[in-house]
Image 1 (cartoon, rainbow, N blue to C red):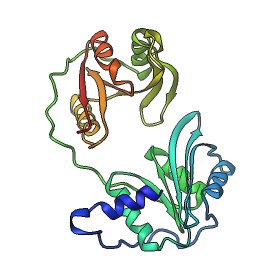
Image 2 (cartoon, one colour):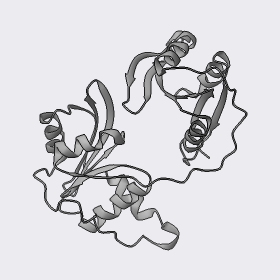
Image 3 (tube, rainbow, N blue to C red):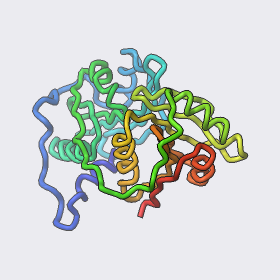
Length: 258
């Protein structure tokens, strides 16, 4: 949570801090929830159980919690930020504006917001917490060149793609993310420590290439994907990329973060 405030204030570091940005007028001025724990409990009471993965208490009386929610068998990540009296509303508004400018979809009310990593569930979170949805801004797609991507193989479902990955490097603990993607743990079949992978099918080549260009557009965030046909596999274990791509008839698209 504190990092979000710092990022917002340093976004224009070359010319000093950006001017304060008020909270959007549609954000309710008050909320019955004042802490991350209260928001977490409200999610659970209202049908969105959320398991804590990280908790952070702040000196100004604020608090932050990252958690994994499950709705209808689909899991998705949330970042809860609740601000204490030591943080003024314009600082919160500036943080909200910065995050939305980075493409993040938020749910907000009073002195808190939740970054819902899967925007498809933002409305459900807003209903559970009596907040409003603040959609993220559409980010420009970089014009990075891509390698020649084979037209095949193609898969009809992400489960078929997961089966192909499983045969090569493993694909266990499969979870539907709710936005057409599937996550699993991979690497164990070839002796690596299990690590995450995100599998996605795309309706056409243009959509696939857009997803690839966005994935390699974040400074400081290395990424390695295997791709061909109508699919991409984003591998958290970068050392698997060449082997997976070769075995599945694809190529590697990667970025070292620099």
